[in-house]
Image 1 (tube, rainbow, N blue to C red):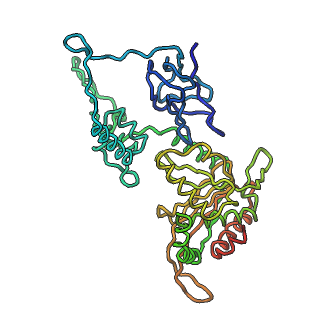
Image 2 (cartoon, one colour):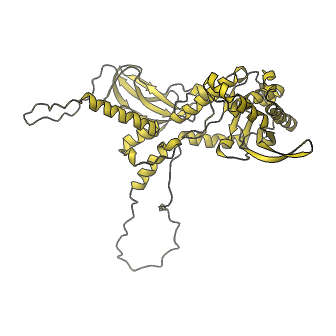
Image 3 (cartoon, helix red, strand yellow):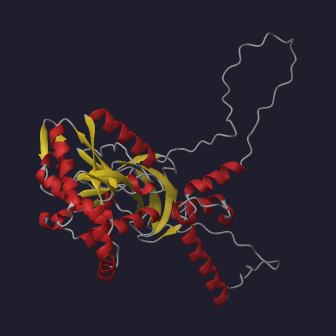
Amino acid sequence: MTIEIKVPQMGESVVEATVGEWLKKEGDTVNLGDVLVELETDKVDVEVGAESSGVLGKILVASGEDVQVGDVLGTIDPNGSAAPSAEKPSADGQEEAQPKETPAQTETKEKAARETAEKITPVAQRMASEEGVDVSRVKGSGPGGKVTKNDVAKLLDSARPVAKEAKPAETQPRKPAPPPAPSRERDPREERVKMSRRRRTIAARLVEAQQTAAMLTTFNEIDMSAVMELRKRRQDAFVERHGVKVGFTSFFVKATVGALKAFPRLNAEIDGDEMVLKSYYDIGIAVGAEEGLVVPVLRDADRMSFATIEQQVKEFAKKSQDGSLTLDDLRGGTFTITNGGVFGSMLSTPILNPPQVGILGLHNIVERPVVINGEMAIRPIMYVALSYDHRIVDGREAVQFLVRVKELIEDPESLLLEG
């Protein structure tokens, strides 16, 4: 009796995926728990494991096809036998013995493999192996020169010759040529890269957010002097005690929670003709990843210490780079913070992350002249933006929310009183 390999439940709101790479072939022996195939969702990649030992039977859905939860991907035969592998016989008809690796050779291969993992993302490594690409020929564009999937794709695309159509011999008298039709031949200066499922879903959700919400953005500026002075004064002791630097993120998470407590409609969502007001604070932190922006969530951020926030954000950044974020990391969220300032952004209008009704955008810090007590001074200023859904958040609330964030950041000791 064969066992069906089905698309598993993939978490909240995830019902569809794209079949990625099959890691086993038809006829391969599989053990319980072996990863058979990878599925790409709009949030993370999901590994589908074998629920029984046996032999991989039919693969019913090929790589690149879309599937839904419950669809059958293939079958496992628990009582099957693996397909025989071709052995090269020797001249006298006996199987030719393969020389065994020495311990030194094995250690050298393992060391080379470890070094290559450090220089290339897992997705790019699988793609390079599948296409027979020499990774040493690929120039990495990722952090620290790491080779990404797009880098491998560009090398493969540049190596493919552009086929030209052969012109048939003319046997009839020439007729007046019709007006030239637009050429569909690809310009060699152009590159076509198929959008991943994650990128397609990100695009659809951003358009959906703009079409379904009455989105508006309000701005303010924050004097970062007090936070910067406090970080400078306490940084060494903080690192020694907690093993991580105190950044700006933890201050803004704490200030956001304080402002949400004062203006709870920004920590809500719309469900039909009802407002769902939430008394918990799961703050999403936007993080750039190879396949697009992801938003892992700090659960119960109001109960977290500054150190816990910084440690968790650092872990999110690491997991986004090596592709190990889980669906649980990304599930839910009641409000989002995005920081374009790390890329040099001066000002932007962030787009809502549905079904949330508020998102706070942070930007770079620039020394600017300001008037303080009637006198001109140079202070480190950050512009901040709050996009909100005007259907349930009034302009007054939005402006006061942003003012409250400003007050808490400019007087960071008050964050302790906010709890």
